[in-house]
Length: 556
Image (cartoon, rainbow, N blue to C red; front, side):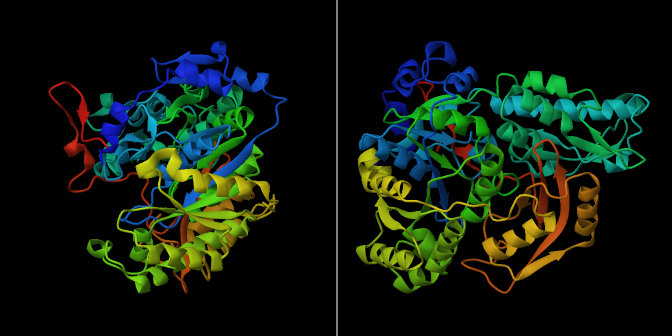
């Protein structure tokens, strides 16, 4: 089979104006970036305000493994499969961060014959939104330090500065740095650090804003430090909120691309799932729900992270009520959770598969806890055996899955996802009882403990001394009952990446709680979470180059 890059480069793409017209986007609402990608003007929401919303389907997965699950591939597959059975569908994705593209993960556009295209542009720079987020974030960083340097008129306590700098790259050396060296003319020395752009609060604000004016208000509320009297210092106090908004003025418009089979795809914003709220923009979802009968959206990482945050944060802020969820697994990943060595995953081992299905069952339970029907999609690999497929199907149904189907779209495109599409349509037609995990107004501790015990399966929560102080501080600032965004490892249902499959008998340690005042939530840091990834020994960028004809090779 050809590589994903070769398939994408050989594809015949529809002109983006044709994709837009077929989706119901008018010419004056389309801002083209070349022939195959565009932005959509927000005036479309005014025109479509009276149109009923389509059905919203959220794609999630089991706990990630080295074996791979294929959540984005499944999201694209489902979109192509719904197109193949004649449904009016639109896919909503986050924009890829170049850090993971150059690191281990590779691209964020799917794979095989289930891809978003143009593949290279989508994964590298795209329409410039990530650069805009980085620029707005770093403008605020510069404004903060300049204010302290020039007489400190806001009486900022430098020891309370919490606003880092950002870059869209994996670089562990930037986690902790010293800035301002070189003498008085070059600033004042202080400890600083960088977060990856996807972990910036500006990215979270961008994803949760409802329009340009809401974006302006949210950016202005960002808290960066405290005064010596203990009062919060915001972006508006530094008079930076307006300029940050101007930088983001074009970025707030959703981006339009397409699948390999021509279905429309919106891609907008890109917060990570383990350190942010893990979902594409609310604006993007609202546009798609007005344009299509079925909207597929993908949440970052597994159901304990992206799915939970979609339900409790995005749906709460956006006013959404999903109709169904698709839970992605593979035979290989399930055997990996069952303790099978990576090098042996191609061998049939029903005992390992049976043990690993505990992780799948845990995620089915999480989806059902939110009152949604759960369709399990087994992303097929050539080494899967009929006995393995049947065992997963049997155990998933016993665990409460609505339906279990095999997805063959990686090799077959939309035709290989017809069974998945039909199962999802049936699930969407059934009544559901979607509800948030905790009611409106629940305290921070009530929310943290509900997520820990009812989603992760913890026995309880241990608050470190700093977290206890932080929670008291959040109450003083008026954040005592805003939504909680949990930051924890994506490699386990627990806080510990070494606790695999379905851990039990653990308590969740919360080390600190920090405000994301612009985003409208607080972040609870669990375990040893880093907001700046590092590169591995052999990162993906080492295999990327151009050939003799100037074409990209090695990108995946």
